[in-house]
Length: 271
Length: 248
Image (cartoon, rainbow over all chains, first blue to last red):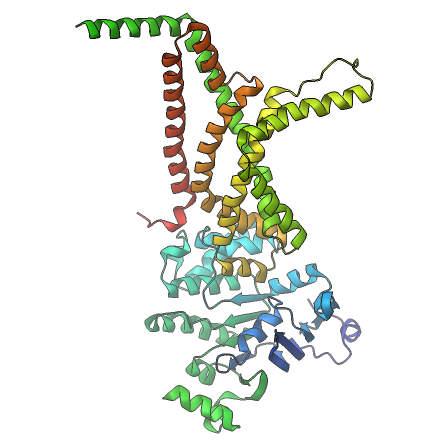
């Protein structure tokens, strides 16, 4: 869909037409602990942003606040130039103003989880068509055709009639990536997609993710895979204690760590 | 030899009595027992899922209502609940009818015995089913519910596509137990005059003075009903949990 310049200007005067996701001053507390301390992030179409940080740095929370699996305490999330509208609810906490809008935007932000989270009572094929058919209301036949093609692409077409618990972790994660692709998402959110996998299964998942990056998909990837961050992503964002510690072009960041924190982080990783 | 003769005599008496019409009566009794049990299970399933939802609610007041329901109806004797609904219902209906003047001051409106019975047994069954449904919901992998939200499913879609199929799968073994309990509870409905198996056996025993025979036959019939349901529920369990069994 191409919005006319006038319409775009109406939506957000300073809006950049190439913006895929824009997060402004996001804050989130769990009890007394402030996990996100005013984080901003800008992803343009085709960007692959690796979000790094030690555990507890807030990187998963950031991702989960973008599609409102967690509700941020304050801050703005813009997806493709559209602001997710919030209202103040009980006890000063904000809540989504329009849950329909959130559901529509979530369908454009397909998420891949650390523990796959495939629906265990559905076959792989059913997992791939459930949301396209019921949420996006697309014709089932078309969705099935696309699902089979996606399963061929991630290399598990032979497993299309299997139930998730009957497959290896690597196969499940590839099925989960195919489920995300079946939504024709504007942005893909990866929440530590290889952290739950046995080391020998990590490669097959990273290969699929690399091919997605190469075809120009917009991706936000929370990961511990330094190789992926350095070689595949277009930007690296390093979070430390709930703040953006450093942000930059990956080769540059890894060759000359801009901060002491990031330097220490990658040194610890290489040990 | 004498013992054998007397046994044969007993058997032939039993045959005569059953063939004289009590056999058909008992078969009807089985039919009513199954009808009472099935209708009560359905009432219990509707109430049970509502109560389970209340117990899982974020709202304290709803949780309290749900807790009270299961505490009361699991904690009271079944017979008391049945009397309460049947005789209590009769009293309420009569009172209402008298006050509107639709019956005379000495007339009585009886609670329909089948309705009163299945309501009482259904409400009790609902208390047990609520616990089964609640446990099943809590056993669903949280990540799958989260994925349903992340893929834009509305609350209704999440319920229909992810929660309900999994709750049913996990609930089948527990529901098998409740079904057995409900079959046994249905015998108590005999006090309201529904001609189910217990009442029929009672009538036969009293009018023929062959208590031993008829209660034994009824006992065997109950056992047949409860034991047949076990393999049926096992089969259902295998079907609904097929995604967790090893493929062939």
